[in-house]
Amino acid sequence: MRANERRRARKIWVPVAFGALLVALVPISVSADAQNAPSVQPACPAAGSERGSIANIDERLEITLKDGRTLRLAGLEPPRPTPDQPDFDTTARDALRARAGNEVAFVPLAEKPDRWGRIPAFIFFEQPGAAPVSVGQFLLAGGFARFMPEPEAHPCRAFFLAAEASARAAKLGVWRDPFYAVLSPTDRDAFAERAATNVVVEGRLSGIDEGRLRTYLEFAPRTARAFEVTILQRNVKKFARAGLEFHALIGRTLRVRGLLDLRFGPQIEISSPDEIELIP
Image 1 (cartoon, rainbow, N blue to C red):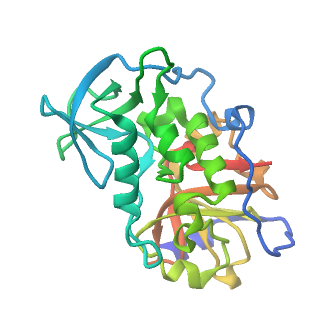
Image 2 (image 1 turned 45 degrees about the vertical axis):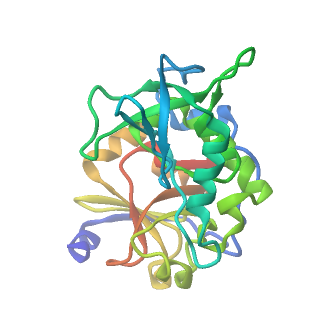
C-alpha cells in the first residue's frame, strides 16, 4: 500500500516557488528532445513503403483501404467531442478526407493487426512532383489531434511534438478548447472533470518519493494533494538510460501526458521516457 511505501521511502524536497505555471508556447526543438531519446534511434521515415486506395476514413482517423486493411495513425490521439466543440471528431475526419484524396502511402509498424484489426502506421499524402507529407504532422499542426506517446511512434516523436507545439501556440483546433488545456498540477477542479481521460500536465518538479514498488514525481508538498506521476520501480532504469535522472530534474519544468487516475489522488502512471518532455 502507498502508506507503507511512504514509511520506507527516501524523500528529497527542494523548495519551489509555485505560482501560476505557464504553458510553453514554443515548438519543442529536436535538440531538446534528444535528452529523452535513446542514443541510437531509428530514423523517422520521410515516405511510405507501401500504397493503398482509400475506402473509408472514420471519426477516429482510422483509414480503411480497399484491400480490407485498416491503418491506425501511430502517435496520434484522435479528438473527442467536448461540450464546447461537439463536432471535433467529424471536423478532423473531414479535414483528413479532404486532404487525402484517393490513395495514401504508408509504413506499417507491425506485422499483424491489433485485436481491433488495425495496423499502426506512419502515413503519407503523395502528389506528383511534390515531396510526401506526413499525415501525422499535418493533423497535429492543424490541431486535429494530440501526440500520443507509444513505442511505434518513437522515431517521429520530435517531429510530432514540434507540429503539436505550433498548433498549441496558435490555439488551433483542440488547443482552443478548455477541455484540452495543458493543466497545472494544483488545479484540482480541472482534474475532477477529466477522470479516466488522457491529459497533459505541466509543472515544476519539487520532490522525489522512492518507495519499494514505485517512484513518485511530486509537484507540490503532500499537504496540497497535488498531481503526481508514478513509475513502477522496474521501469525506472528506462528513464535513467534515456538521460532522465529524476533527482537531477528537481526544479525543472516537466510536461507529462497520460491517462488520469483519480482513485489515489490525481496521478498519471508512466512507463516510457517518451511520456515526459523537459521544458526549457
